[in-house]
Image (cartoon, rainbow, N blue to C red):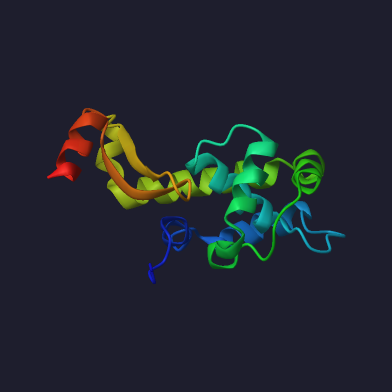
Length: 156
């Protein structure tokens, strides 16, 4: 039995949530919201992006399959498709645009300004655990490293 944190939870640890809360407050994203907050919506969409979910039904089905891990992923309960659809339709998109700009800035600061001026690109290589449909291994390399080379290193 795995007692460690999931990859999704480990990635969340690096998010500047105080900046996210500022973006939500700036646009009144949680005004008259009872249970499904902007952070819950963002975590659902973040999970969908990492696991290549392309539809609301696919997102909610996958989250439903992981019901016993939702609390550890930062989500308090299962999310209905209609709830996620309503949130996507009614919430101000500028919240997530501003937060994306913040994440890009944090990334650029983390990798230094030299990588910006030399136009280096990065790739994220993921190995999915088919039982849980979540990444079990993530490596970030420059864009010249092919996925096959990463997986060959894993097999040794």
